[in-house]
Amino acid sequence: MKLLSVVVPAFNEQEAIPIFYKEITKEFESLKKRWDQLEFEIIFVDDGSTDDTLKVVRSLRKEDLRVRFVSFSRNFGKEAALFAGFEHARGDFTVCMDADLQDPPALLSQMLSAVIDEGYDSAATRRVSRKGEPPIRSVFARLFYRIINRMSHTDIVDGARDYRIMTKKMMNSILSMKEYNRFTKGIYGWIGFRTKWLEYENVERVAGETKWSFWKLFKYAIDGIVGFSTAPLSMATYFGIFMAFVAFLLIVFIIVKKLVFGDPTSGWSSLVCILLMLSGIQMFCIGIVGQYLSKTYLETKRRPIYIAKDTSDEEEEG
Ligand code: UDP
Ligand code: MG
Image (cartoon, rainbow, N blue to C red; front, side):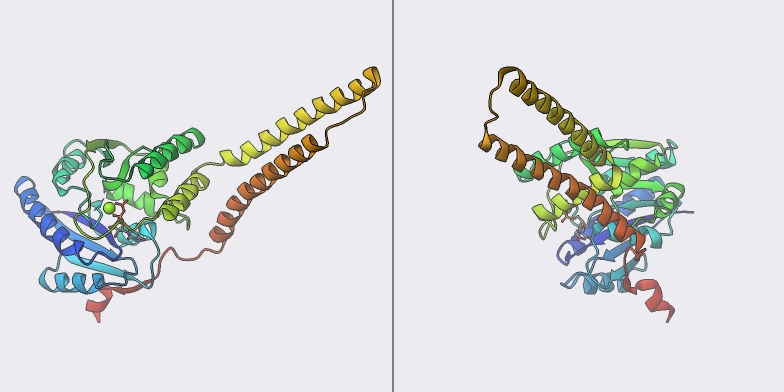
């Protein structure tokens, strides 16, 4: 007997969950035909939803014991939800999927066959198109991947989804990374393991709305860079050295000009401009240091990654 755990982070997904459940159980049936030893469980992680998400999940649980859930005391974000799902998953294989069916269940059989038959540790998916997404978002997303891959030694794949299946071994190594500032896409790259990449066209969500505002994504991008690269810190250093060097050349130039040609030094406005520019750059560099400092600060507090208010396991034990 092998068990497949499906981890589903859900934040205000009351409309999407019933549709998701119907589709995924249909897929389970067809997977069962290919691997008759396979059992399934679905772990919904209610990320502090303010709608009836938990109620919907509870009613599914009543009908189907393969459904389990963890419910957070507030919204902790998708990264925390994934971590909680992984902690509760009991499967030999674990797959994470969005509740909005943007991760096509039809790919599951290919993903399973990669880990069961072909001996991969993991099978991951990436979107080759961003059809249906606001164009401005695609532009920034592309830019982000280009920047982070320049800066970080960890390979972070453009268009990679969180939709990924992995073996227990690989999942345990993810769980061993207890950092508070989580950037799962980077963590996957960092731990290594053999991954098979599957590609597919973008699918639009079935119901509800995207939970990511532009600012949320922007902050997420900064978290990713700060979490997996220290390049911005060295950049500040190099820039400082470069500026000091330029200033030194200018000083020599001005002194020589004064001594040899006797020109009085002029240029009040250029001085102000330079001063303003340099103090701007200084503030920027201090800001970079501040970003790392704030992450370090949060990390040293060792706060839990999430707080679960209710779980299906607890409720049924008593
Ligand atoms: N999600 C979550 N917590 C959040 C935001 C999102 O658990 O704070 C879940 C959401 O319910 C969905 C998945 O993460 O199942 C992906 O979110 P969404 O579809 O809004 O993102 P997009 O597909 O637009 O990138
Ligand atoms: Mg989505």
